[in-house]
Length: 109
Image (cartoon, rainbow, N blue to C red; front, side, top):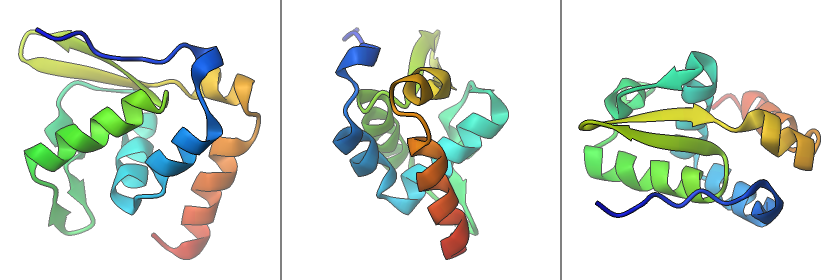
């Protein structure tokens, strides 16, 4: 099985975070994972509004979030456990995540 890529904190770039959260579905997924603390099944966050995101798209969204440094994923059997890296990201870029997510809230998404 191919290892998962997680950037070191010092390698996390703001443009990668902005790209990852520029997609409203990824932003919604990120918020759901952050709210849950840990998500064991990707399908647990696979609904955005009244829409179900296909598994293939979910995998892609999680990969973008992981490679941007926003989440940490661990394989446990056939499941993937995902947790947010908010503390690390906030230490490196104070206020960035809050500003982005607040902007989504203001837009009503």
